[in-house]
Length: 65
Image (tube, rainbow, N blue to C red; front, side, top):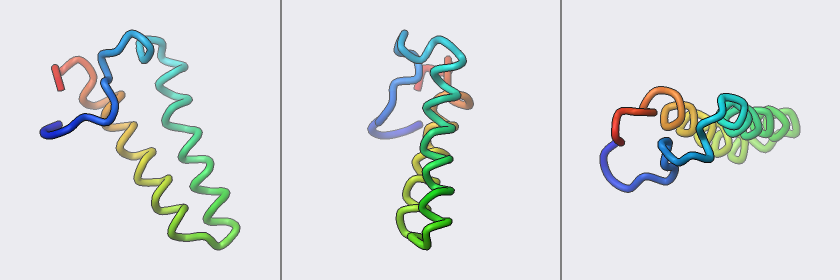
């Protein structure tokens, strides 16, 4: 990812798979809660955050940023 990184995927904290999955699934689940309650703005915001985390923690991991 070019530019400023919000998450460092090579940080040892993100080494376990369960931590990376949790970091993606929690905001995605919360997006579903917000959407169900009719708060589409917050649902989109948390959904975008989950997508960003997925790309950072699974796609770009190990590529040196």
